[in-house]
Image 1 (cartoon, one colour):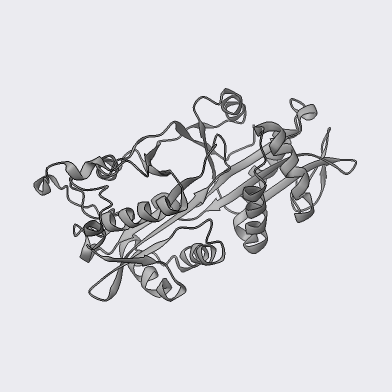
Image 2 (image 1 turned 45 degrees about the vertical axis):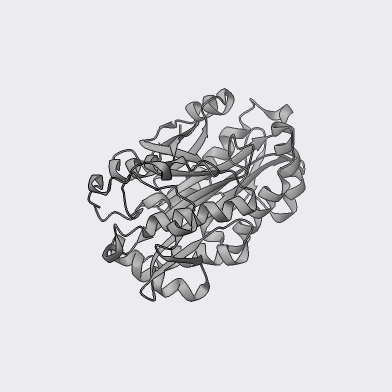
Length: 344
C-alpha cells in the first residue's frame, strides 16, 4: 500500500489527512471523548503542515464521509533517545464503523509510512485503566515498553524541607538528560533562591547555537535540525511550548524543552511534558538542572498547568532517583512500543 496516494480497502479509502478534515476529525474525537478537543487537534494538523517530514496523518473515508483518522509524529531526540521512532498520538473511528477494520487499515498506513522513512518502531502511551485502547494496542501488536512515565503535581514541593545530603549525590554518567545536581534536598524547591543557581530565561532564537553546542557535548551528535524545530515550535506556539535556557558565567549551559499537552490517549487535563533537558558537563552537579525544573514549575503555575510528566528509560537509575527526589512519582500512564516487521 502506498499511503501517499488514495488506497482502497474493503470498507474505506485510506488517504493523507487534509486541513479540510478538521471538523470531521473533531466530531469523531468528541463523540468518543464526550468533549471537544478542537484546539489540540487543530494544533496537531497545523504542525503537520509546518513540518510535513515529522508527521504522518491519515484519514479513512467512504463516499466523501470521514470514517476515522490516525495521527503520528516522528520522535528524533525526545526523552534522551538516540534513534528515531514514530509516536502514535491519536486515532479515532466513527461509532458506526468501529470493529469493521477501519482502525487496522489506518494503523497499517502509519506502519508503512514509518518503514518507508527508515523508522523501525512505533511508540505510544495510555492510561492503564483505559481497557478499550489497551485492547486495541494488544491487537495491533504493541508490547509494554521498558520506559517509566513519571509525573509530579506542580503544587507539590515539600522536598525543600528535607535535610541536605549532598554527600549522597551520585556521579553523572554523561547521558543526554543530565538533570544537574542529583542530591535529595531541595530538588523541587520553587523558592527564588533555587532558581538563582543559574540565570534561567525563556528560550529564544538567539540561544540556538549555544544549545546545539551544549547538546553536542552531551550526546556527541549535532542535532541542530531537531533542536531548531522544537525551538521554532516554542516561538510559534507559545501556548504549547514551555522551553527554557540556563546561563552561568554569561554563557548558556543548560536547556529544557517541554510542551503543554491535552490530547493523547487518556488525557483529561493539561499536562506539561518534558521532552529534553540537558546541562553542559562542565556545569554538572551545580544545580543547573534543578534550577531549570524550578523555573518550569513556576511558569506552569502561572499558566494553570497542574502536572508535569516525562519518560525515563528504566535502566537510567540515576535519573529516576533524581526525578523521584524532585517530587516525581510513577504515573498512571503506561508506555508501549511495537517493532515494525511485517504488519500483523
